[in-house]
Amino acid sequence: MAEYGYLKELIERYPVLEPVSGSVRQAYEILRDAYASGGKLLIAGNGGSAADAEHIAGELMKSFVKDRPVPQELARKLQETDPDGGKLLAEKLQGALPTITLTGHLGLSTAFLNDVDGRLVFAQQVCGYGREGDVLLAISTSGNSENVYLACVAARAKGMKIVGLAGRGGGRIGRIADVAIVAPETETFKIQELHLPIYHALCLELEEYFF
Image 1 (cartoon, helix red, strand yellow):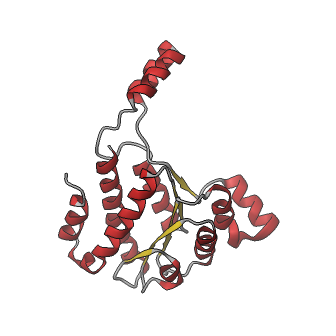
Image 2 (image 1 turned 60 degrees about the vertical axis):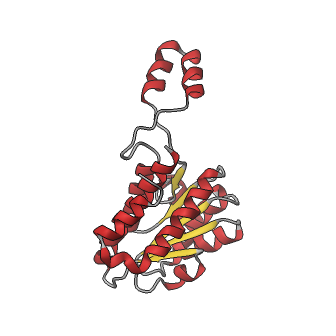
């Protein structure tokens, strides 16, 4: 499919998202350019948005709808390292777009919650993982989740790009983000129902471009 084809299809399937089509395209371009430059994606969100973060990582870190064979040079080195295990790895490993969810890491998160300040668990991980050229995807249906917003502040200070995925006008996450995709709904479950096709389209577009 030609570049932007999945984004066009998104709007055809979900006409309610027409007002945010430009933001979706800008978000894709930020992610595309970051990956093309060797950057990675960090994702933060609470509750259903935490589940969305894990979902997104699953689509980006392994095959979504296309085959993603590892590069031939890596396949060769794997088999040189171990003829049997390397052959298995070369055949079954898949190309990945580096993505880290900030919603897991239970030991770190509970230690920071107990020892320091639970509101800063995502920000602490941005501080540790984030580098200039990386992207933070900040998911919040209200756009005002404090722990996600503080992660955005840390990302901005680290020289990262910020993509917001929100609703209800975007809130303060929408204001700090380089681009905010604001689902045109106000009820949480309806916002989440629109977030899924948006991030699926972004993942499909990225897979099409890189693989």
